[in-house]
Length: 118
Image (tube, rainbow, N blue to C red):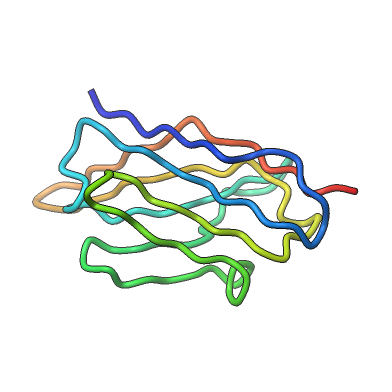
């Protein structure tokens, strides 16, 4: 059974920081690309950051310069360090594991709420 369990969300003031974690089980973690997406109310889900199995990193425009994605293959965990948070970062953040070998495998966590407010 594949499980992606996010943690680290919460309420933070503007300018503050949070570190999200996503612990993965049930798959060969190191062979999957890992990403963080977010979805704000009445908005589409958007890519925040992604890190490939080989370590290549991409960021969505909203994350550039403020967020850092990393992974620890020994701990089957992907992280998202979020700094200088803004109210517009308020959303549910989802962890995603994806791999394409002959067919696409796509797994999602349940999401963790991040609220940036004073």
